[in-house]
Length: 496
Image 1: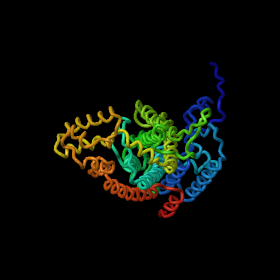
Image 2 (image 1 turned 30 degrees about the vertical axis):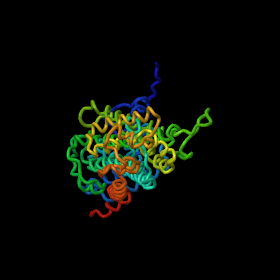
Image 3 (image 1 turned 180 degrees about the horizontal axis):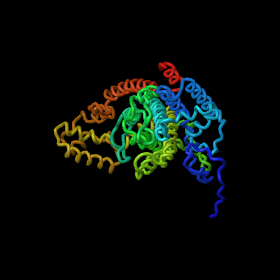
Image 4 (image 1 turned 90 degrees about the horizontal axis):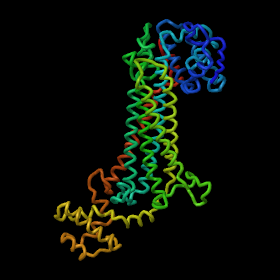
């Protein structure tokens, strides 16, 4: 295939001193990342303001120049938000060069000082970590809201008895609230991982330079304070090549989506005509283009599908890094799009699932009728005999024979009489039918992690308290993320 290779206009790259000719138009387009990394503009501006303050502190920039730089950067921020810069100007290359070029247009040669001792390598790590801290908080907030919704749903249906399943076969009776609390625990682990992700990434990278550190006496602790990091990274080579914070983030998002997907799969099954345990509000369903009777749980199916996208994002990210030599390589340009996609898919899925959950109604009549079939009391029959003195293995065998007898005669356990039961074991007595009622089966599970009413009520109360603590911790995280106003106040309070 023949390509018409058009040359770009006058070279205006931040690295143009070494490269003596214009880059080819195709090369410009191929390396162009502004449409993706423009999402980092506010973090790049915050980081540049802080770094300029750090340069002023060591005498590289004067006070008047710092004021010029800050005013210029604020104007650029406003222009980006107003869409005043062309999205396809390949001279910009990326968000960093856009900000630096436009700052020079605004304030002149003073703009040329802001990159002193700084590399795009440590600059982008800073932007990504600031973005990450914000993104983690957004996901945590949405998960906390989902968790609260799960607890409210459980509280509302605290006494409903429901069939637990193993191998998608009816297993034993369980409180529906206990089932819901199982997902509360799953998402709680996701929340804990995200808190750890925030804390482990909370090290300030500036001063790392391209890979060997800076030749200027940058006060890294001061920069860390301005940017609200808990500390500073200790190895420049590791810091510019480190993307563990993003990889951990995508992994954590994939765990959230995996748990959402499993929850969705359950609800899709329970919503089917064959089960009809739940009904999803019309507002969260769609219909068929050809079959008039259909009411489809498309939202749940889409979340289940999107979980594969986020899992794929994790694989993409790992494969992108696996063969890289030490420190920075241009492959890392691709990391942001992968992370942004995983974040957007996860956040939107959590938000809509939370709303859908509020609009689910239990069909208790259908559930109760289903509980009459399936012999979910079978384990409790075996336990009954074992507690009377039979060995559990014999009890299991006897119970299996009784269930087979019921199936062959098309009867339920409640249709049996004591004489028939005693033909199977003399341990059966008049208290048997009370012991295998659904309520007794529920409360017979006496371990504190089980489905008995007391444990579930206690665990539900504890879960509400845990959510209050989590929400307080999320609020604390917000104070550890800089914004322009807090940054300006901190700079203002810095002695000259």
